Image (cartoon, rainbow, N blue to C red; front, top):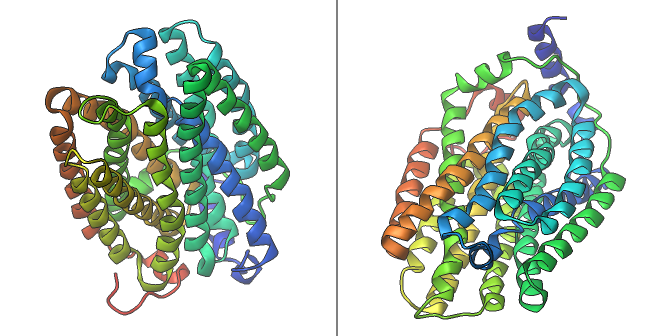
Length: 420
C-alpha cells in the first residue's frame, strides 16, 4: 500500500468508532493517565536532573555558567534531533513498542551519568541520554490522540504534562538535596535509581494501542504538517516558550547563590517546587480548552507567563518566588494547550506532527537556553528577563494567528461561539 493510502487508512481508523475510545472517568482512561503520568515523571526526572546542579558542576569542573548549561542543552538538543526519526519509527512499529524500548535504553545510560570521570565524558553520556529519552515524548501525544475520546483528550494531555512537571520538579529537588549531603555524584545516582524504578511501573501499566495502524515512515507526513500555517505557528509557540522557561530555570540558581541573596544549594533547589504549579495548571488548561476553545486559553497563558517573569526582577526573594510561581503556572498551561492542539489538529501522521512540535520545543530548550546564558553573562538578570519577554511576545503573536482547521471541526468538541 502507498504511503498516501496508509495515511488515509490511519485517518479513517482515527475517526472510527469514537465511542470505543477511552472516555472520561472510565477505568481504561485512568490506566492510560497513570501510565503516561509515570512516563512523563521518569523522562523528565532524567532529562533535567543536571539542571539544579549547574552551579555545583561549574565548580567541580571549572566551567562557566554557559558551559555548564551544556549538560542540559546537549540532552535536550539530541532529544530534539531524535524525536522526528523516533516518531517515524512509531508509525511503522507502533506507539507502545517504541515507548517501551526507548525507556529501557534510557535506564542504563542514566546509571552511567554519576560515574563519568570528566566534563567531556559527562556531556557525551548526557547527549546519548537525550536520544534514548526521545521515545516517550515523541510518541505520547500521538498515542493519546488515537486512544482517548475527543471529549477527554484535553484533560488527558494535561495530566501527561502534569507528570512532566512533577518529573521536572523531582529531577531538580532530589539531586539538589542529596548533593548538599553527599556530593553531586550521589545526587545524580539517587535520581537515576528512582527513574529506573518508575520505568518498571510504566512498563507494567501501559495499555496496548487499539487504534494504531502501521504505515511506512516517509517525508510526506512531515511536509504536510510543515505546509500547514497553523502547525508552523504552534511549533514556533513551543520553541520560544521552552527557550524562555529553560533560560529562567538554568540561570536563576546562579543569581540566588550570589549576592545579595547568598542562598545555599538546598534552599535554591526548593524553588523548583514551583513546578507543582504546572501540575495543576496543565490539566486545568487542557480541560478549559476543551470547553471554551484553545486559542483564548493559550493567549491568556502566554500573558500569565510574561507577568510572572516581570515579577522576578526585584532583588527580593518573595517577589522572585511569586514571579517564578506565576511564570511556571502560565508556561505549563500554554504548553499543555499548544501540544494538545498539535495532536488534535493532525488528521493523519500524528506521530510526525507531535515529533515536529517536540523537535522545535527541545530546540528551544537547547539553543534558546544556551543563548539565554549569554544574556545572563552580559547583563545579569535584567537582560535575562528582557530576553524572555521578547520570546514571549513572539509566542503571543504566533498563537494569535492560529485558526481552527477543517479536521479539528470534524473531530473535536465544539467550542463556545467565537472562542477561537
